[in-house]
Length: 78
Image 1 (tube, rainbow, N blue to C red):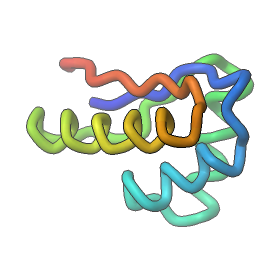
Image 2 (tube, rainbow, N blue to C red):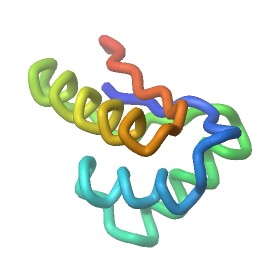
Image 3 (cartoon, rainbow, N blue to C red):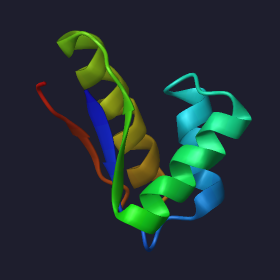
């Protein structure tokens, strides 16, 4: 399970881009998840096998770092 935590300093557009390109969400779902994170502090963005979850979380975190955003992506066990 992967969650994204509150991203006060990460742009909404960047979060939507990550949700679409890394987590394969459609634009509408990505926007809804981004708003959920923004309003509640975090959201589960997918449930994957452990290896896939770690890989996707790593990709999202690296992209955030390259763009100087403090986006936090966390892999949690169910």
